Length: 215
Image (cartoon, rainbow, N blue to C red; front, side):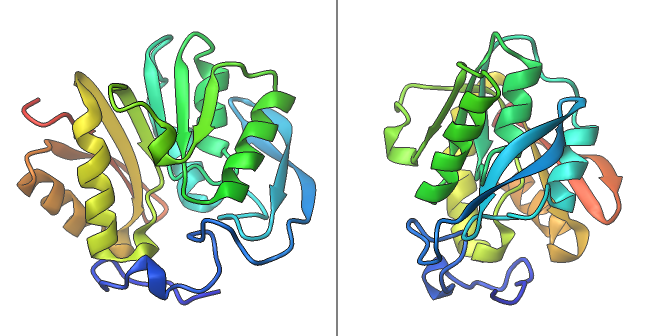
């Protein structure tokens, strides 16, 4: 596993060895079932190597799931960097009338998210690579544990691509570890024209609330 890179290290994703940033991980796709808390209940999900946090719900995602506000009952939502799906699955379970899009570069992660959605009976969740998401789709809500470890430039490019797709009243909640640059990221987002505030801080993680540009 590569070292944890500080926010601003400027390490491009291509320099990272086979890991959850890979489109097609080289490690064996050996799946197993774990039990995790999702939307107020313990649920069985599939995980595998080569996908982010394949042993459990990671701490940052856990903070987001526990402390972000209840999502709206309906709308169009995005989980950016879905991994095996804990955020997207939670959004789908909490808001069955919403349409939830889960995006990742990792094909194994997407396949796991689809399998987990099916096993949980979710028909409102669509797990796709970015190019498969229609250009005209706009999001009322984005929840993300963004991939800080890809480096500042790649992260900034990612956020520049997706945050402009918020609806005028849309909002994003991003969880970022404080010592990996949450405060620097908040300042950068504000400089880019996205009103951003610290929604909460828990266990060394910040949850940033980001409004649509001009909001």
